[in-house]
Length: 101
Ligand code: FES
Image 1 (cartoon, protein in one colour):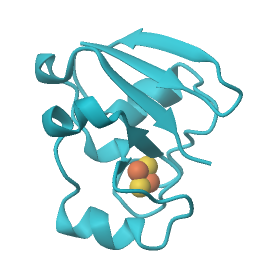
Image 2 (cartoon, rainbow, N blue to C red; image 1 turned 135 degrees about the vertical axis):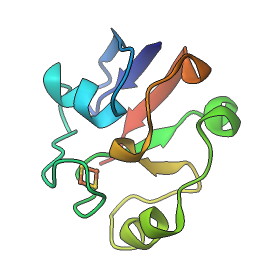
Image 3 (tube, rainbow, N blue to C red; image 1 turned 180 degrees about the horizontal axis):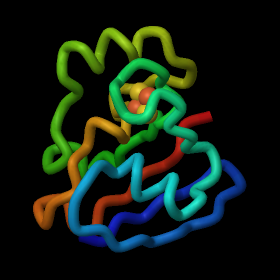
């Protein structure tokens, strides 16, 4: 699936991944602002992204545990997700994610 990241400097990068989490894909490719400090276990919020409104339905809502973690994060909106909790699959091909502040 192709996933586009928009970083805080306005740069757009499209990456292709087949499995694993969106956070891992971003970290492996040095997307700035996605650090994945906790290794993807939903306990750091350094992988926080905003999902494009039109992609929200396909990506889905945060799980309960993720929502609790997001309460502690900055720059939270209704489009917030932790990217370590988004599994890459063809179902999310073409989504656009903006890295949170
Ligand atoms: Fe830590 Fe996602 S990598 S919450």
